[in-house]
Amino acid sequence: KAGVTQTPRYLIKTRGQQVTLSCSPISGHRSVSWYQQTPGQGLQFLFEYFSETQRNKGNFPGRFSGRQFSNSRSEMNVSTLELGDSALYLCASSPDGGGGYGYTFGSGTRLTVV
Amino acid sequence: KNEVEQSPQNLTAQEGEFITINCSYSVGISALHWLQQHPGGGIVSLFMLSSGKKKHGRLIATINIQEKHSSLHITASHPRDSAVYICAVTPNTGNQFYFGTGTSLTVIP
Image 1 (tube, one colour):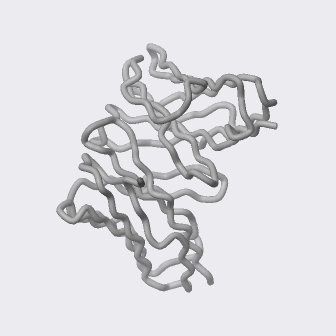
Image 2 (cartoon, rainbow over the protein chains, first blue to last red):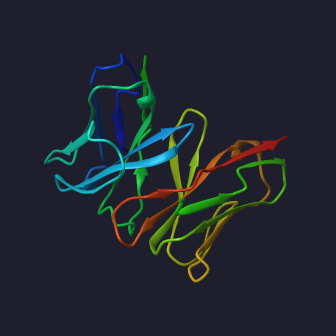
């Protein structure tokens, strides 16, 4: 079966712009969570969506937002990009997001802000 | 304050050696995960544990819920095992991960 698909794989944006990243989960998975990975901070949780509702949110500014569609695909948006937003953004899908069924990660989107 | 602590941070081993990576956590959990990340970024979920021990090939993961501690063992290590290994927990209070900082493993032929 198809895995978790993230698009695009690479992205270069200018400071002040906004960006939208996409994550298509495994068919049947209703939970999608997003993570930021930087060399300095490691992996950090951004937010998790389940059945189109945000269930949990990490400690990131309001410039980071997301949504989930009825087909469980999710998008993440970052507005007013800063240099420090350069990172690998990963999403993971799970049937329920509750830790009981495991998570499958996408390959990530590498965002560079210049 | 880190909910998940891993050790060591870096590890270099000779091919064939037995390797242990440790993870301690401070929150109540519904599951603990061991993840592997190769250069290039993709993350693979190796194990999900809520008790006991799991084995997959040369990899073994154990967890002690009472002591809030888990170990990942690699037997007969091989250069292709070189990667960053990350411990993560799913707290029983929410639907997310807390991550350790990762252990960078290099296995030398």
